Amino acid sequence: MSRPALVVIAIILLLGLAGGAVIGWLYVTRDRVSLLTYRVQVSEETNMREVVAKEEKLLKSDEVLMPVIEALNLVERWGMDSEGEALAHMRTKLVVSEDRVRSGVRVIYRDRKQDRALEVLDKINEVFAVVRFEAIRSSGFPPLAPLKNQAGEGSDSVPGVPGAATP
Image 1 (cartoon, rainbow, N blue to C red):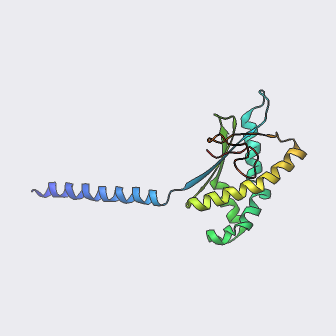
Image 2: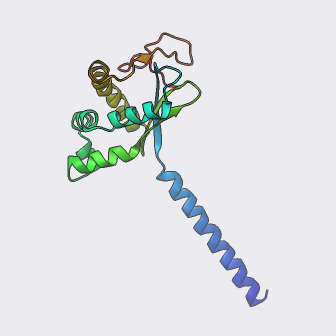
Image 3: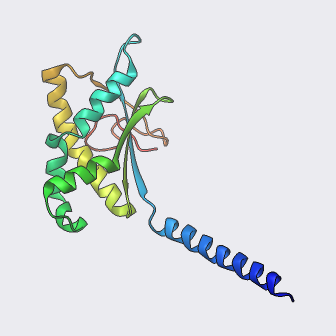
C-alpha cells in the first residue's frame, strides 16, 4: 500500500478510537434522574408558569435544601468545602418544570448515582411537604390536588407531598 493510504487509515483509526473514548466517558459520567410530579389546584385563569416559578423558588430555598444537606451529610459525601457550595450544587441539579400532560409540577433531581438521586429527592419531598403546607397557610400558595400513580392506586403514592406520584 502507498504511504498516503496508510496515513489515511491511521487517521481514521485514531478518530474512531477518540470518538469511542468520548462516548464512553459521556456514558460513565452522565447524570441519573429521580422524578416527582404533583398537581396544584388552580383556576383556569391562573398562569401555570407563574405557579411553577413560585414552586421552584420555594423548592430551591434555603428553608428546604439546607435541612436536606444536613440530614444526608451531603457536604462530606460530595467532598465539598462548605454548605454554601453544596447548596449551589444542589440548586443546579434540581429542575422544576411544568407537567403539561397532567397540569402539574414536575421536579427532577439529577445525580451521578441513581440511589443517591432517589434518596435526595425523597428527603427534599419530606422537607418540602412541611414547608409547603406552611406556605399554603401563610402566603396563599394554591393547595395540592390528588394525583393517582400509573398503577391506579390511592392518591398518597409518594410520602410527603400528598397526591404526588412518580411515573
